[in-house]
Amino acid sequence: MTRFIQGDFLFSAHTGFVPEGVVACDDAGVVHDVLIPGTHDIPQEKVERVRGIITPGFVNAHAHLELSHLKSHISRLTGISGFATELMDKRGSFDADNIAEAIQLADREMYSNGIVAVGDISNNATTIATKQQSAIHYHTFCELIALHPAAADVVMDSGMQLRGQFETAGLRASLAPHAPYSVSPGLMKKIVEENSIHKSVAAIHNQESKAESQFTEHGIGKIQDIYDHLGIDTAWFTGYGRTSLQASLPNLLSPQNLILVHNTFTSPADIRFAEELHNSLFWCFCPNANLYIEGELPDFYSFYKAGVRIVIGTDSLASNDSLDIVEELKVIQSQAPEIPTEQLLTWATHNGAQALQLDWAGTFESGKKPGVVLVSDVDRNLHLTRESRATRLL
Image 1: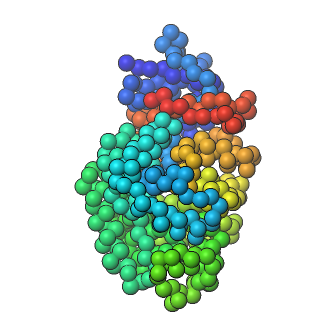
Image 2: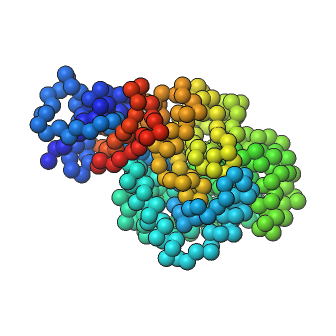
């Protein structure tokens, strides 16, 4: 049976805002058509009318589902070194049942908040069972960490074994370097080569903290506290003499998509450098996590003005109070009100689907199954308000 769902506005990246637009779809959520009043005959007796913006489902381009049990257990505003050391101390102090239950609850939270697909970082296999049963599509990034060049082969083998566990379970997965301060150039190149064989997307944490820049440029600063906490000698590492992005990106060149995550301290010069060097970049913002850990935010407007491809993530419940894309968009709009809501929704839907190579998601087009989400309580200018929230309709 065809359903006709009409909002005050319908949004899709290829149509923009359509006043009183109708999405026609079946009960399974497969889109048949987008109907525009005055252009199409709409069977009014069958229309399901809702107040707000109808949008395709959201794509959460960056999450850490396996850390869900750490919600409210990690201190705020400690900086990346304090956050990382506290996380390492606490993440293993929960039993397997508590961890599994938290993962399931987080998955259900994202589903309720209108998220249809997630780019999820994994260091272990604890999320496999939930992902197999979930109505959400997951692309798992098996994260690799090894700063010392001599560890590259061992860590690479371990990452490929983890990827194999997800693939054996019928789940989509690829390899991902953790960050410029924790992965050697040689390991980055090995990851790129392996992902290129499988034509897989990759992701890397980028310029999340000032400490990252100090360490990667000069081999000093609070990132050293993380290595000291782990008992790892980094006296041999003296830095690359360039910003972390300019040092790392030449080792990550590939025709495949690369998602740069956080970008809190990325400068306009770094943006230009990256865009000129890599043709398949996506820049991911996780603003609430940035506020939780560092208390600082990216210069959103500089990225918007540069015309780069932007996607939205939530990071983990270890560094966020919720897994809600609308809450992330509210922060961006409050800091950069010049950015139109239409653009924000494009980032959260169409761009995210492109980044994760999902041809069924991101827009309302015939044959796609992108999810149908209501964003309610927007103001007369279609700006998000404090009360704005997402409700999944399909």
